[in-house]
Amino acid sequence: MRWFIFILLYIAIDIYSFQAFRTITKVQWLHYVYLALSLIVLANLIYHIANTDPYKGFDRLTMYALGFFLVLFVPKLLTVVFMLMEDLIRLLVGLYDRYIAHENRFVLPSRRKFISGLALGLAAVPFLSLLYGMYKGKYRFRVLNYELFFEDLPDAFDGYKITQISDVHSGSFDNREKIAYAVDLINQQNGDVILFTGDLVNNTATEMNDWKSLFSTLQAKDGVFSILGNHDYGDYVTWKSGQAKRQNLEDLKNLQRDMGWDLLLNEHRLLERDGQKIALVGVENWGAGGFKKAGDVDVASAGLKSTDFKILMSHDPSYWAEKIKMHPKNFQLTLSGHTHGMQFGIEIPGLIKWSPVQYRYKYWAGIYEQNKRMINVNRGFGFLGYPGRVGIWPEITTIILKRGNMSTI
Image 1: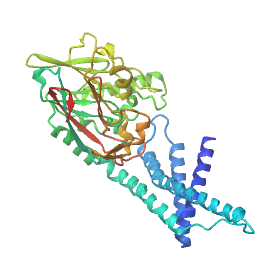
Image 2 (image 1 turned 45 degrees about the vertical axis):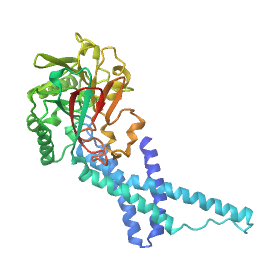
Image 3 (image 1 turned 30 degrees about the horizontal axis):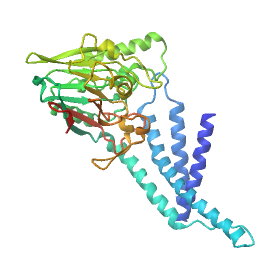
């Protein structure tokens, strides 16, 4: 039934947007090309989703089927908005002519070519952007640098450099050369520590088989630490048994250890310099709404005092919003990911920062401060669903801790 409604809605939008295309060009064969592409893209998406292996979830071909669907469908939605506005005006003009000007019959004015051209011209922006995001944007890695000041940072850690990555989603990768470049870029930051904040895979541990050797090369003076994200538990695919699902999670844990990563499962580690220490606290996934709630910061921070300087790793920023920013133990800095910045948005430093994901998550990308506590929400290293990124590029974060009055540079 859901597919039936979806197909009807798609056809309705397609036919409506086709009116603008037909107004602009009278070349008959182009009309056929337009309609054929619409049907092919829809059929391709339905075919791949219908044939998705429930034990593996969406594969790369299905993601690309979704991507090409969005490339055509989103511009059509924008076109329909303009066409509806024009049709409202046409309706009002027709009603005026019939009932105010007392024309003999009710006639809708013909569509204006200018409006149709404007609608199609604007629709070309998301069309080209979504295509770019699929072929270039998803691997347009960038390094974001911050200096964060804390009054209670131990002197020995003044200048301590953290490199954060998040949301690898290795099951989506399709270009080893680009991933090798990004892994090397992480190492080039020369962080004192590398922190990974969850979602190594989309669904199964085997997705890392082709990438394990690359990510094993990550190195930092104090090591590489990691936590689990919601996708790491295998909750979004079907398993032949509960034991198979549990074994998958164990395989993923062992894989990270084999790569030399220290996986924190509701526990903490102490980092030491010149006899002074800071605590690195890692919780399992905890997300608002229907997401897994396995994280327990009280268990993870057992034995730590409120006066200790603590860095918390929590995949979902909603944990910070609901549990951490007012927690009596005072977690000075939290590192999260999860949102991906929805892989779509507009960011112009100092002018605009927008993504549809902000209507779901208050803290969705970058640095936020409240109650003298800070959180960084990493925009993610990989991608999921739509196989691309537009405006919200894949991110490697470096954070330099500084001792002083709380501020961000």
